[in-house]
Amino acid sequence: MRDVARGWRADGSSIGLVPTMGALHAGHMSLVEAARLENDRVVVSVFVNPIQFGPGEDLARYPRSPERDLSMLTAAGVDAVYKPSVADMYPPGTSTRVIVHRVADPLEGAARPGHFEGVATVVTKLFAATSADLAYFGQKDAQQVAVVRRLVSDLDLGVGIRVCPTVREDDGLALSSRNAYLSPAERQAAVCLSRALGEAAKAYGGGERNPDRLRAILREAIESEPLAQLEYAEVVDPTTFSTPGSLAVLAVRIGKTRLIDNHDLTLPYPG
Ligand code: AMP
Image (cartoon, rainbow, N blue to C red; front, top):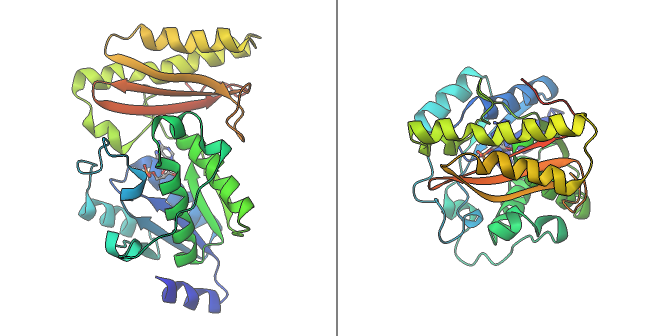
């Protein structure tokens, strides 16, 4: 990948990178579309990064659809698909990890120890391998965005970060590769995340600013769904992920499946 990217650079081409773990859906493809509009060359990386999964997590059963991914990316006209193996990324002797403090500590960082260390490490390596000028991330993973922005700023990586809006199903459920785990009943129950965010946005729009009240609105909407178990509901600052703030963030278990979602309460809720 590095040599291809260097060739592009030598030609004066700008390079956009879309990092993914595959099992592509319309959310990923919206990042690809955004990248195509702004760059001469677009690289999509497909790598299920083992070091961002904790011991009890779903690495082994994470959905994989390599042929479908490739045909979607070919149809979308990307210039390269970068699919390193685990051995390419982490050969024996690998000893370096990138650790982002503070913004990576609460919420997803607390629930998934080591997750953001894995993300920061792989993103740093992907930026280096692809010589990206711009990299595209989804608002769906809002804390990941905040961690990557911090990383790029702190390590002077010189990569522009673009954030694309969350793509949702018609009923509001955010698209996610993990939605494939949901049974039909769980799929129906999963709408409680977007419903909760919508209710919090409505209250915020009506003038509610009390963080306890906003948290309670989120919590009650999740608790009213019998198949859902709330992991956290917070309203945080979108840059630091400390409280107080105006970004509502949720992590919810529906059966065995862990889903996250978020919404900037200063914006009207779509739908
Ligand atoms: P993943 O393959 O889950 O690691 O996701 C790769 C990128 O796609 C990340 O930047 C995600 O935030 C983004 N993404 C995932 N789901 C969505 C969605 N529903 N809308 C927009 N972007 C998304």
